[in-house]
Image (cartoon, rainbow, N blue to C red; front, side, top):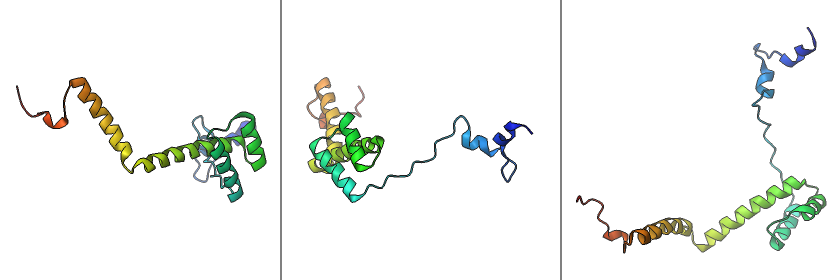
Amino acid sequence: MGPSASRWEMGPDGAQETMLLHGPFARKPKRIRTAFSPSQLLRLERAFEKNHYVVGAERKQLAGSLSLSETQVKVWFQNRRTKYKRQKLEEEGPDSQQKKKGSHHVNRWRLATKQSSPEDIDVISED
């Protein structure tokens, strides 16, 4: 057998396993979740308090000083901004987000159709 034989290693059941692992649509193995140390988290949180966005040289410097990759710092900041936005919405009221979304559309529809309130609308009546 030539050098290409090693590419088609037979699995215990005789299947061509390598295609499943390294085929054209193979997914990268799932990345292990980064466990940040308490001191790293403290530094990241402090940096976030000053600025919700950290880019360029500042991100490189922060990543270096924390022994993290720039990607890890970038993703931490993305996730932290998402958490911040969620907390802001919860402070406004537990279900204010839903109310706002719903009433926004109702109010726009009411304006567009010159309706005074949803109760006045008779949906069932047939002309």
